[in-house]
Every structure is written in C-alpha cells, then in structure tokens.
Length: 218
Length: 218
Image (cartoon, rainbow over all chains, first blue to last red; front, top):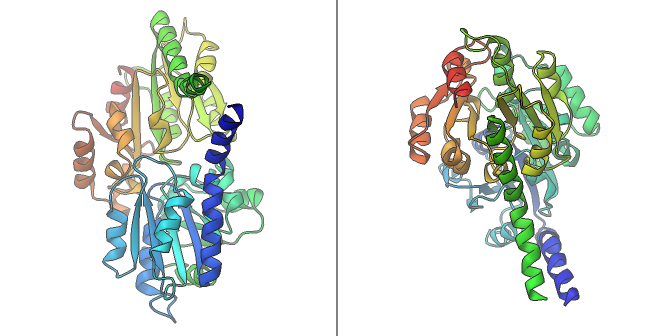
C-alpha cells in the first residue's frame, strides 16, 4: 500500500514532464518550432503577437504562426488574434495559474502541423508559476513591461534564468516613467548574462523588426 | 491504509486554513486589523505604502502601520519601506508564488502588537495565486495598474471577487495609454458590484487621501 501511495505522488509530479516529452516528439516529427511567452498580466504579450501578425518583419508579411492562448478566464485574447486571421486556440485554465503540458499537447495536435511551422504559446499572465513548467518548447521568452519597474529580473529571477530572450515592452512610455533602463539591463545580465534583450513598443513599432526577426528564427 | 492516504491530503489542504485561524485569533486578541494587498508585479503596491507612510491622510501624519513584505527573492521592497521608518519584515518565499498563513503567523507574532494596530501584508506580485490563500486578514485589496489594461478584472476574476476594495494605480499615466477607464469600472462591477474603486497615483498623489482614509479605517 505504501508503494501505491508513492506511485500516486510520482505520477502527479511526473505528469507534466511526460506530456512535455510527447510535445517535443510531435514538434520534432513535424519540424515545428514552439515558443512559450511568459510575463505579468498586461505586460503586452498579446500586443506583441498582434503586431507581428499585422506587420511581420517588414520584408516578409505576414509571418505565419499559430497561437495557443492561455488564460484563467475569457476568450478575449483569442478574439483579438482571430480578427487578424491568426490561427488561435483558447486554453482556459479556469483558475489555474499556468499552462500545463497535457492541455498544450492536445491543442497542439489539433493544429494543422503540416502547414504551420511556428507555434506560439501565450501563457497565463504570471511572472512566477509558468516559468516552472516545461511545455516541451524550444524557447521561453520573458516579457517585461517597463511600467513594472527595473527590479523585476532580480525579484522574479526564475523566468529570466529560463528564458532564451527578454523583451522589454512599452518602451514608448519611457519619458513618462521613473524607470532606470541601464539598471534593468544590468539586472537581466546578473540573472542571465547570455540572453538578448529587445526594447520594443508594439504601439509605435520601435524595435519590433529586430525582435520579430529573432522570434521567427528562434 | 486508504484512510491514512486521505488524511495526508486533508492535512495538506487544511494546513493553511489552520494557520489562518490562528492569525485571526491573534488579531482579535490584540485588537489589530490586517489587510492583504494583492496585485501583479510592478503594479505599485510598495509605492502605495511608501506614499501612505510619507503623507498619511493629510490630517494625520504619519499613519502608524507595520508591513509584512512578501517577495519571491530579495529584500528590495522592505529596504524601500525601512528608510521611511515603517516597521517592516521581509517574507521571502524562495520561488513560492504566494504567501502562506504559517509564515505570516510567525512574522505577525514577532511584531509589537501592543503598539501596532494596523498590519499590512504585501503579497508576492501575482494576480492569480495569492487570491486563493486565506491569511486570516480583515480584507484583501486588489491593486491594478492601469498600464495592465482594462480587461484584467474579468480575465483574473478571483482576486476581484475576494477583494473588499480595488485600487487603480498609475492614474497619472492615463493620457499616455489606450486604457478604457469606463470599461474597466464596468468590468470590476461585473465581477464584484459591491466594492469601492479608488483611482490613485502615488506619483502625483491624486486620489491618495481618499484611499488612505478608507485604508486606515478598513
């Protein structure tokens, strides 16, 4: 009986990783890349995707990608992308603070992966929990709005350690904020010295071409 | 053996609530009120407390309160309050996405509750998880920065349902944002029609006197 008990715990602990392995296998088989976008509520994750969906890289419009849109409640973000003809599925966690690999796997398999070669997971708005869950992705991207303050990379280090790039959004608001940009860049470097940091505004378009080129080639 | 297994789960589930009951008992015995401030990273929770610590209500300066400062990592927020001579303890979760009642209980008991009659818990920056954990507080306060967008009350409804007040911060940035204030107020109302909504800026001081009066009398 005590074996049974241990087994239950092991299954619970390992379940996400098992599904992440399945995702990696599907991605490899189909030659699809998947990125997992993580950041606080309202940091501009959906706006980044709207911008890329509308403008591409400048040279190549539109960039073809599908989105798995994670939210605690509502289909609002999926609706925003749907009007731009971006293929999108809404993954509602019903209170859950992060996406798990099982739900992502099923949504991924429902996409037309013979045609779609880039899948973007937009995780639940949360700078803490989503960083802990492997979704089998090729890269996590840390999105930080400059309205959140320069100290967040050291206050919430796990995401920035896990990420392959950091995107500083809402850079157009810089003149209106007390935001110490050099300090923020230094904090990112302290936590993860090897990642590129893109300073962008999806409102003015500043920095978006550079980020998009990195994003589609990630 | 199957009883034992259930017991383990019950203990795990009930542990937070047991500590919350202990907190409520201490607060009642000492005649102390406790509020639990919850919002996204960088929404301005610490800045609200800095402002109240500096300015009080205008009539009554300073407002005496102690802060239990919750963070994933670093003592940065506690340091900000410490320079203002606000009694503050730093509660570091080391990766945890919310404060639990056990840690709060011990930190609370270490305060001089014969002199301090208002204790403010500043929770980990997270719009999702902290709302689910009872800390034995008299009130949760939902803090939403207008830079996060007007849709957050319906996208992350639990906190707004649990809260006894909503504070819209960074209202001074309104001219620079595409933020639909009437829609936001309507969304708060949809989720929880009974709570006051304070529109404030801890940068310009707008709305802070009203909020502070509510806050100290909560």
